[in-house]
Image (cartoon, rainbow, N blue to C red; front, side, top):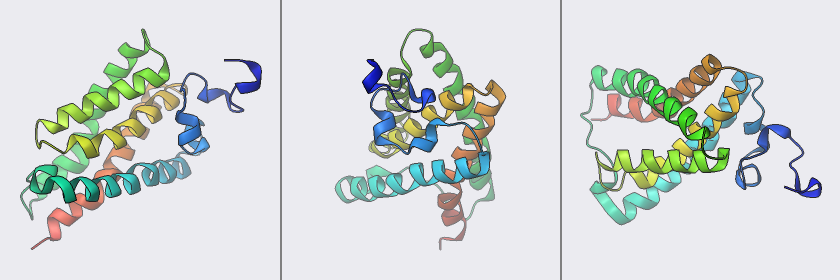
Length: 173
């Protein structure tokens, strides 16, 4: 990258076009509460739009079939999935980073999670790839502060991302 094209914020180096497409703040691992709020908006709002678009085309195939009114499902979606998936994702990201740029690592991770979620519901991966693009980016950015910080921030972000849908499952008739 030439000096005149280098990002003004060093943490974004290696992320390819992502710093131009995502909020600049996502590439600065600081102020965790404000960071989580921005990251949540960056995952949730586009995922809602993608979900509406995919649902309008794919119908029932777009989403997995979760039972309504189950506290067990709520705990699985808000606690277990974010923690377990972050452990898996983080491990894969750390391995991929040994061989690939941050941008390639993030994109490959998002595509892999999209495919994995499509196994549960055919079109679900078309929605899920976006949040996992952000989760992967956040993990690599916060990894600069430490592995525990990266794990905690992404697990919390993922839990927040899943919270409103999980509440919807609890209160739906």
